[in-house]
Image 1: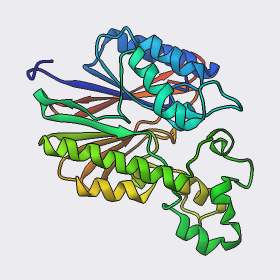
Image 2 (image 1 turned 45 degrees about the vertical axis):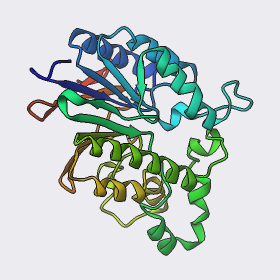
Image 3 (image 1 turned 135 degrees about the vertical axis):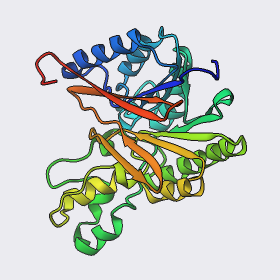
Length: 298
């Protein structure tokens, strides 16, 4: 890549490849990227459950650009006696091997540096440790605190409880991946690079689920608890001078915020429609585009 001209990075998330109601939008997004291929394509998690992760990467493999990904929580769901192993094996071995097979950089394992642009991509799946609302939950609903670990809403249960299976609990896994990401941020900082942070679960509360104006409920606080964590926010603040952008997914709700002087985006998109954000690094502009099925409003 040349350090002259316009360096473009394209971010999308929550493709949920293989879910029928989203495939028309997914294919439209792919065709648009094929027609106007960026320098760097980044998939920010929930790429495709089980075999659909493989199918999705195969679809994008032929694109002539640098390809990068972080997985999402759906990507590490496992079934009983899953031949891929438990969620930890899927996260640390199966998915990285698929990424390598199809020419994707697995950002959870190492940052990606662009020396000619003095720029680094840093990120990972991110996770939740309930810290965004645990105190409020305990104060307002002390008899319902068990819902944090059981992920039991007033109606239904979060599927992570049923399909994330490993030796970790949410808090121990959060500590591990935040520590990993901190080390990657240090690498980029040592190089004197500006940093773009990419996570699946929101990197900061400002781009997570919008909280209602009404008094908090069990369900609204539980969604907040399962969104992200304060640990990562604290680490990001240590490197705020070198972080230029945050891009996250997971919530299916687009958001744009100035968080502690950092431009923070939740990419958005849902099961039935998809979104992309294209960053022109040369002039620091971000443009959005949506893709709908023919039956959805544009």
